[in-house]
Image (tube, rainbow, N blue to C red; front, side, top):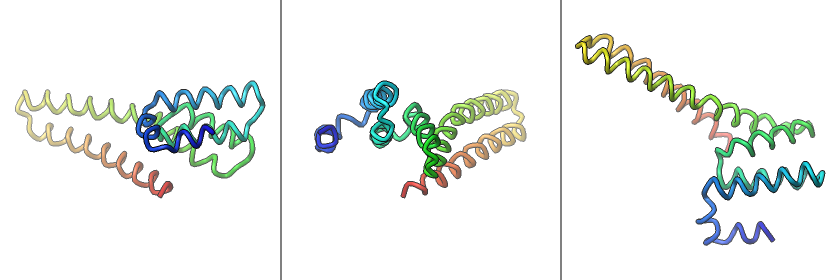
Length: 139
C-alpha cells in the first residue's frame, strides 16, 4: 500500500524532499529495531534513498544491515555514505583556497592567485571525477 501511494505522480512530486525520506527512514529503523523485520527495513531504507539519494542515515543503516547479511551490495551503499561524509571537507578546503586567492589578489600577487585557484579546481575536479565514477554504478 505504501508503494502504491509513493508511486502516484502527485505524491512523487511532493516526496522529493528530505522530510519524506526522514519519515521512511524512521519507519525502517522502527521495523528493524522493534519488529526484527530486517528485510522489510532494508526495503524501506532503499525507498528512502530512492526519494533522497543523499539521505545519509538511510545509506548508513542500509549498508550496516546488508553487511550483517553478508550481501555484496553493502559495499556500494557504504561507499556512497562515506563519500557523503567527505564532501563537506572538500567544500571547506575549496572555500579556504578561494579566500587565500582573494587575499593574494588584494596584494596583487597574481602567481599566488593562480596557484590557489588551480589547487581549488583540482580538488573540485577530483570530486567531480569521484562523483561521476560513483553515479555510473547507478546507471
